[in-house]
Amino acid sequence: MFGRTPLGRLLTLFLVFQGFVALATSNCTDKKHAYYPPKEGDSRSPCPFLNTLANHGYLSRDGKGITIPQVLDACQKGFNVAPEVLGTFGKLGLLTSSNFTFFSLDQLNLHGCIETDASLSRADNFFAPNNGNLNFNETVYATLASSNPGVDYYNITSAGQVMKARLDDSIANNPELVNGPREITFRSTESALYLIVLGDAKTGVAPKSFVDTIFREERFPDGWKKSETPIDGATVMPIAKAVQEASNWEATNGSYAGALEFVIA
Ligand code: HEM
Ligand SMILES: *[C@@H]1O[C@H](CO)[C@@H](O)[C@H](O)[C@H]1NC(C)=O
Ligand SMILES: *[C@@H]1O[C@H](CO)[C@@H](O)[C@H](O)[C@H]1NC(C)=O
Ligand SMILES: *[C@@H]1O[C@H](CO)[C@@H](O)[C@H](O)[C@H]1NC(C)=O
Ligand SMILES: *[C@@H]1O[C@H](CO)[C@@H](O)[C@H](O)[C@H]1NC(C)=O
Ligand SMILES: *[C@@H]1O[C@H](CO)[C@@H](O)[C@H](O)[C@H]1NC(C)=O
Image 1 (cartoon, rainbow, N blue to C red):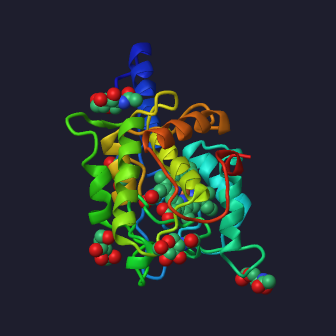
Image 2: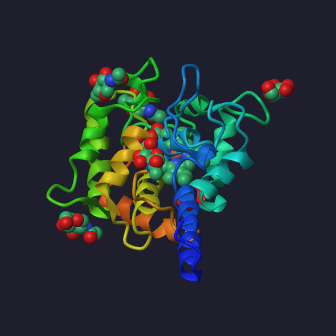
Image 3: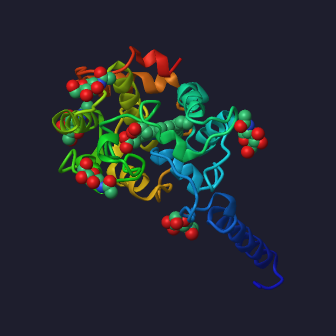
């Protein structure tokens, strides 16, 4: 197209190459991991991140017939979170199913297994007999969404404040609240995970728009890239501890004892 001179040929080659690059970076060539919202009958969980992985085809898009190795592999491929961080969640996830091998995302909603009260984006089981603790709830999420006012990021301080506010709400209104060491361990780990996976792994500072997109839309946020270094236990532990400290947590009542080491074994 640029004539027969050597420079013309070079330019043509360059433009063709640019075309390949553009194709490779658009959603068109990566249909396998393009975002599609769930269809009627698909299974989704109380976990915004697992739902995101299903919506992008890292987990089966129908959210059914999932195994522990599959879920750990998906978390690694989609978010670069190492299996050592999530192994216990994965195993507990399988406990929610009567099948020895497979579980569906909606089964993870089993109250008291991984599913806890005082979640960031779901109502407590007590208020939610019809899967209200499974589905995203904007009223609940408003506490997180309005945290750290005046800046465009969430951090350890705001994450701790949100956890405290959500727990205070449950203490005041949920007569069946379960709030022991096991619950705070899970909740601290989850808050640390959204900061680290969507933000800076060392400082725990995460852009609000990334966090809000995952929670509200369950898709990879525009402009977000997964961490280049694997997010392992040594990365998550200190942030989870700091978030828990910032939340000023005290046990009210709850289940059996646990520590952060229990989750990140
Ligand atoms: C990259 C991996 C993962 C990340 C970043 C992540 C992050 C989160 C976050 C931030 C929450 C809190 C949601 C809220 O409070 O509203 C959550 C909840 C949950 N996650 Fe995940 N998660 C991951 C993997 C997993 C895995 C592997 C499982 C189990 C197979 C799991 C099961 C759950 C469940 C059952 C909840 C609901 C807890 C509750 O709030 O009651 N997650 N997760
Ligand atoms: C890829 O899909 C996302 C989510 O729908 C969208 O926001 C983004 O603009 C798409 N990118 C391209 C290059 O089409
Ligand atoms: C588990 O599910 C698979 C696939 O549906 C089925 O073939 C198998 O029989 C089930 N096993 C048990 C113990 O229910
Ligand atoms: C959302 O959460 C609020 C506050 O807990 C609750 O009143 C409302 O019923 C929930 N909505 C749904 C659809 O569960
Ligand atoms: C989090 O951000 C707020 C608002 O900028 C700031 O006051 C607070 O010190 C930050 N927390 C940490 C741990 O940096
Ligand atoms: C926690 O306390 C509430 C209210 O006193 C009670 O209904 C609930 O059964 C208690 N839960 C546990 C696990 O002790």
